Image (cartoon, rainbow, N blue to C red):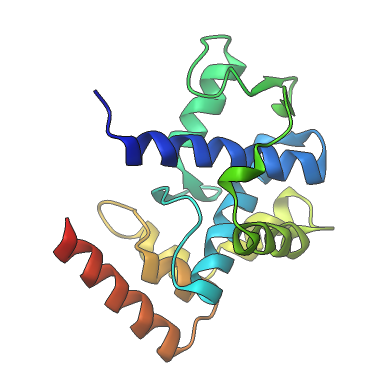
Length: 180
């Protein structure tokens, strides 16, 4: 049986996705995943922690939350999956359509603020511009590693975090490791 914390995190990720879709309307899967990355990045910069706790990986087209990517692909292929109860994915551009409104009980005001900033951060940029924007020096460093996985510090650094912000995030990561 899955623990309550993991169940909560899975549901919160769904609500983040639905919140983004409620603000942007039907959206391509690419933009949805990049907005999630930027929202976690905004939250790390401002509050010292991400919204979703997703693992992001450097891939050809930029940072990707692999569990979300896989879930959206399953929904697109009609295989159900973790997100088939909240959205559909259709068309040549894999447009994501919500099946309900987000449950805002899962999102704090700071979560919504970070998501709104991420939406504005990418607003007006097409797919190529978003890809180029997120292909900065941290992305290239992470892409060159074996695991290709971003740490929280990597995510914050990709947004230009200050030394003070990075030190705070590193300290919080050490506390989390000690508690687990």
